[in-house]
Length: 243
Image 1 (cartoon, one colour):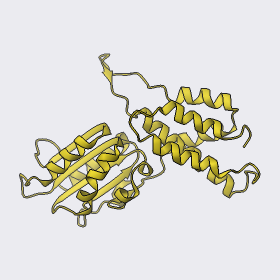
Image 2 (cartoon, helix red, strand yellow; image 1 turned 60 degrees about the horizontal axis):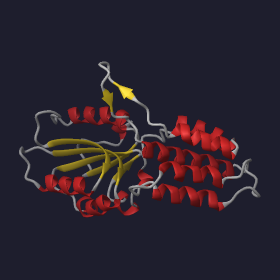
Image 3 (cartoon, helix red, strand yellow; image 1 turned 45 degrees about the vertical axis):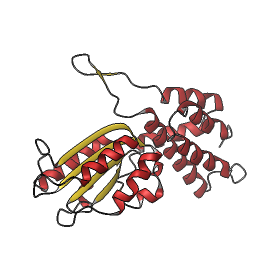
Image 4 (cartoon, one colour; image 1 turned 180 degrees about the horizontal axis):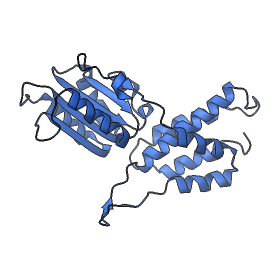
């Protein structure tokens, strides 16, 4: 629950919240009610939902944050993005390092590990829970599969769901493919680490390359134009058939 991290009398200037936006946003909006902050018809409240937060969005956010408040209350910015470009992260570093009076940010991401450590250090980091229960179950099955079955699993994992509203209009998926891949990587890493630490994984089968590859793939997933499918398949192939 976010409530244990949010203190209306001692509000941090920037929160980084890891998880799914559709689960976290309602809690943030409830907290806005506690703060008596209107979330509609309020020029000092801004919510941004975007798949890829690029340099243009970063510069616009900095510009809006620097503008004088329209009211005597707080300025609130809520940003939920599946990923941030490296240029955007570098552009935001200074803004989050130097707090702006009565201005507060709530940034929602599926995986805080995908961000620069220097940027994450600027925030009050909140992880309401790993939120990976389903992914952990799938990761357990994944590492027991043959390489061929793992490749087939990856193909299914990366299928973009086709969503429609009640009137049949196309809707944007709540999770991008890259965000889904990143969450699954976290689950695979967690399962492998737990197995090794519990000694259920034979030391002869353990290879640091598994974790090195996961780290590399996580970094490359953040780069525009990289192939999510190829990167995830490399993880499927780097592990031995029986682990």
